[in-house]
Structure formats: structure tokens, C-alpha cells
Image (cartoon, rainbow, N blue to C red):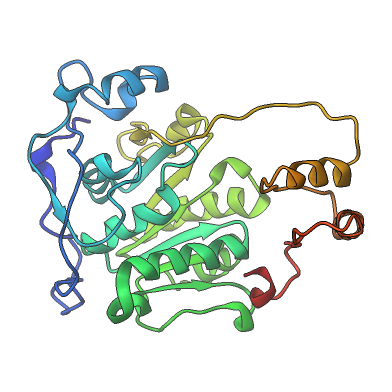
Length: 322
């Protein structure tokens, strides 16, 4: 498959715009980074390894000199220059595998790209409710007060869901989307993006199998697999086209990481945390359970530190997690 800059569709092939759904015209246009385009050396994103991608994709000859203008999303994130290539590939294929490195912005941005392109409904799975909630908030900030209702999140708990009936960008837990698919609630023009697929949870594996079956009986239903660390070849073969036998297209996108210093500490967690806090540094510590977290919190605070220790875990209420 060859991606061309002129393949960018005016809008999604479905009936989103025909139904009078929002075009976001009241939001300001933003100049977007130079858009990646195919070159002789690097015709498709899946034709290069990650090392080659980092080298070639940052070569000026691989980008369009034209300035693109869009209303949704954050142009400063690493996925920005690959917006048009992603939208074109996603809307012109029933299945797509996206390997996007940590810090790329894939979880918060790719859904917005599809939304502005006219996709009627985009479901993005998340393995944790906290992630679904925070990503929804991030998208609502981009949509602004007038359109924020178009983003929402759904969980198996009605008290911990926030989704307007008109929502078109929906973050959803894997378990709930599996139930929705089983109940026949997915539409032919829906796009399902299985995010964080590398975690390979039981719901992820079962959902992928169900989605493949649904695509046989629901023409137009699209599936995107995305992850920061994923065996792209294996997933592409698994999602091969049932008619042609061709592997699903793959896109490899860059990310943004920060340097990490590894230190081996002999002291307990509380001592290490207190030491760094004494240096006026923020600390994120992982513990194997709430009980251990409370012990560490008590030890640190008993040392008369001026810093505050906050706990964050899954059973907290949304208000406490914020």
C-alpha cells in the first residue's frame, strides 16, 4: 500500500456531515506541523524499522512543504506531522496497526483527528477507568465548551461514567465494549481503536477475536490496534484481509521520552522518597498494594517533612483521584 498526500479524503465516507453533525467551524484554525508524505526511500510507514523511521521521517524531503490547518488537537505532540497519513490510512482500510512510542500523544490525539475528519463515532478502549476519565478530560479541553459533550467515557459502572447521548469520541473499558459488541450495539460506520494492546489482557484478546467476526457481518466497521510496544508483524498477520490475505497496514510513529537515571538504593521506599523530597524534588513511587502505600505515607510524614504525600489507587473515588 502506498500513501499519497493527495489521498486525504474531504471527510469520512459515512453520513456524518450529511446528518448535519458539527464541523467545529467556531473553533480557531491552527497551523499544523509539516505533514509526513511518502518518499522514494521510504514509501510507507511499515516499510522501515523503527531506527530507519527515526532517521528518514525526520528528513525534510519526507515532509510536505504545505501548511495544513486544523481545529482539533495539539500540533506540538510528536504524532502531529503524521496526522494526514494516519487519517488517510485509517479511513481507507478496515484494519490498521499503529505502533506509537511512549509520549507520542496517540491516546489523546488520534481520536480527535478522526473526529474532525468526520467519523460518526470513535470508540477507544482503555484497560483502566482512570485513564479513560483523564483522556476524556483532555479531549474536552481541545473541543472547548461548545463541543465538549462530543467526548465522553463509559465504564461498567453507571456512577463512574460520563457520556452524553450525542458523544462521538468515547473512551470505554475493554470489558464494556466487549459486552456492547456482543449485544450488537456497534454500527457499521463505527471505528474501534484498541489502545494499549500490548497489555494482552483476557478482554483484549477476546475483543479482538470478536471484532474480526463482527467485521465479516458488519461492513464498514473499522478496527485500529495501537500500542507503544507491540509486535507489529504478528498483529498485522493476525488482522490480515480475509479476501486478499494481505497483512493489515502498519504505521510506526515517534514518541517523546525523557532521560532516566537508574539508581540502586538499599534503603526502604520511605527513606528514598524522603531523601528526594528533601532535595525539593517531586517523587512518584510504586508500591505493591494500598497497605504498603499507607505505611510509606505514614513513615514519610512522621519525619516532619513540609511535603505532602498523596495516594493514588483504583478503588478511590474519582474526586479523590483528582
